[in-house]
Image 1: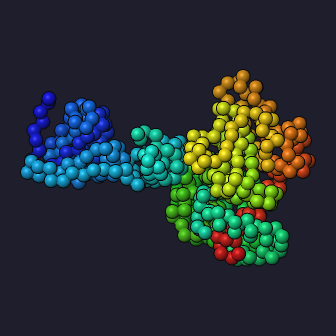
Image 2: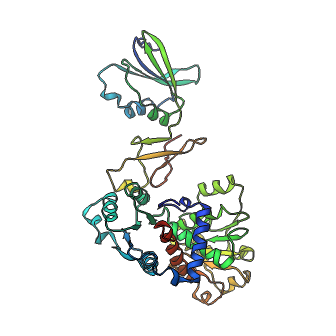
Image 3: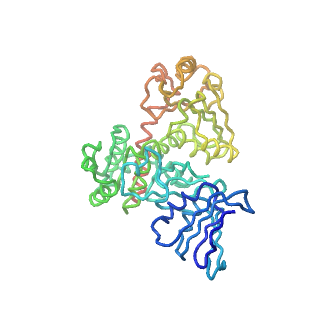
Length: 142
Length: 304
């Protein structure tokens, strides 16, 4: 297995569905960090056959709502002195702002650029989000 | 009652009961309400033309003694200069006591509602919501059938894209014993989310492809237009088109006390020969639209 040095201090985003690490990298704007960031794709997992992992060598604040929206099965581990000091489990956020864009061409957000793109969780069991304005279902979500 | 009516579901069944009762009182004695809105101003902001809806709102306000101002297309408003919906309504709120707004984009009324304090009525936001059309439909059923429960309502035509149909189904789902008969070509059946609502709620509904087959079972027939361009192939259009045109021969299959409704304007989906049938209710429906808008304005301005 590929070895990535263990973190002494930082954040590990674990149990990412295979293939979604780059989406998370972009959504959390990790490209703007000055610290080391490792993206591990197709890592072996005990919970699932394969997974992606992101290791960040700094104790940054992670927007858990964005992560929960992308994949609520992700876990976020906070590392200090080489140990996991906190393990955060995610849930689907009730409301997300400017994380996803409404793709309905008839939505008011398609013509008024200043409006926030807001999605509301309308069906928790099915994980369905709808645009707060036109109620169009967010299609890319699992 | 909420002060911003964006969707038909912003009105509780109690709100609807009160609006229908108030509409009854207005119909019985319109003179008693002729000065209820003296000194009040309704702004009709129509970012897309809809003569029928705009005139209905304006007629309603004028019948209550109020005054109206506004514009009837985006070209004659500051939207043509690129002003946002939010800025337009914020400005108009300074000049009017209540706003009725129509906009071609879905969700525009939600944007407007978040920015102002005065009452706002969504007069249609694209293919999304049009709550006063639903109120009009409910008042028509209430006046002509005497009740909203225990009815078999047939909805015919374009059930996939028809906004009025979706709103009416959701509004009627709140009443006991309502059975839905959904008559459309396969291409234009109700969207999955409406079907899920009907299934999850355990509602009695059937889907049919031909109007003739179900006509005798209906208490209400709600017609909408089937457009040729909605069909995937010409053969299906030719095979089914006559099934969605209501004429005298189909009316002979219906109950003697069935009513025919249509949100108007119609094109050819109801033959003009049906207009003289006492069961044709679509022009009465337009009349009820004015009364129910009067009731809504009174309630929102708290002058009822």
